[in-house]
Length: 173
Image (cartoon, rainbow, N blue to C red; front, top):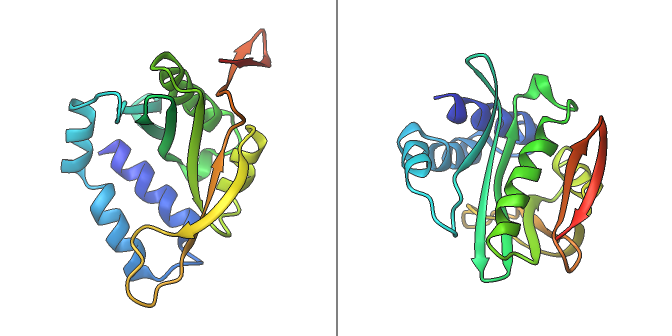
């Protein structure tokens, strides 16, 4: 329930003022329901590496996951934070865990899709070295829908940042 709650709350905080309620309910119901998350926690492979979860006591602060789309390409599929706990480095740590997992599976590059106009996600990923590549239709558009996602990727090698002695270091894998 904690992963579902943080992803749902994060999705609403990100898109609540820019997307219709019906669209948000549809996406949340499809991806962040307890049954789906329970299955995704139990069943992992190289194409879905499972969730990395940040907790404080019993409260989930953030969750994210990804997988490989081919032998050398990773994808961040989901990364959401408790809206009240942003800018603490927690999302960076989750992204680092996803990146390290993908590096260990052979990924040489990493992609993420971020909704156009997402003022939280785009700066976060750009600060981590992702660069805009192209636009495409967003997932879940219904007829007449015009939500666009930015496809962003890291440079030719995946960048993994690790915290050492209270400073961040970049390791290119």
